[in-house]
Every structure is written in structure tokens, then in C-alpha cells.
Length: 117
Image 1 (cartoon, one colour):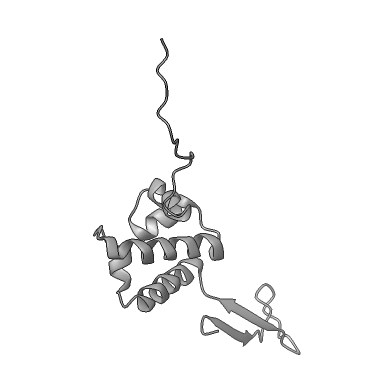
Image 2: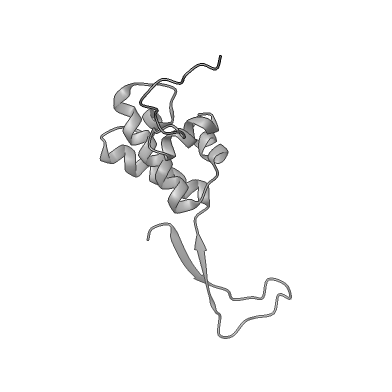
């Protein structure tokens, strides 16, 4: 993993005393960096730029990769809908739609509703 770094503490951060043997400490990149990495991976897979996915353009060819990136961030990182919306410059309701696969909440009715008299 390229976003993980291991180093050894030589001194106790609270007391300043030397630590022997030094236990390893693992640093993992911040969640926004991991989210940007997912966006970049999806963009590369579709031969697009990350700016294509996070930009305001609404072309049909951008829909599938954008939704895929949103779903991956939701599933892998556990971001909330508003947090994902901020990453993609979208409203949270657009993210909800994307994470549900573009389906409405309610099933489609086959026959029209009868009007109440």
C-alpha cells in the first residue's frame, strides 16, 4: 500500500524519555486523500480526469463513472451523503440517487392511481 507509512518512535511524546526498543507506528493517509484516490482510480479506468467526475458537467458518459466513485466512497470509507456531495460538488440528494443505482425509492406503479371522488 502506498498510502501507509511505518516509522519507529525514538522518544516518548509525553515525557521525552528515550524508548528502547522503539515500537513501530503506522501512519495511514487521511480519509480525504483516500477518497481522492478512489476518484482518480475510477477516472483512470474510464479514461477520464478526476476533474471530469467532480466537475459540474452533466453529460451522460460521466454518469456511470461518477456514480461508481460515489458508491465506492460510501461503501469503502463510510462517508455520509453530504460529505460525498462536497467531494463531487453535488447535493446530498444526488449522492443518494447515485448510491441507490439511479432507482426511485418507491416501486413504479403499473396502473394509474384512481382519483378520490
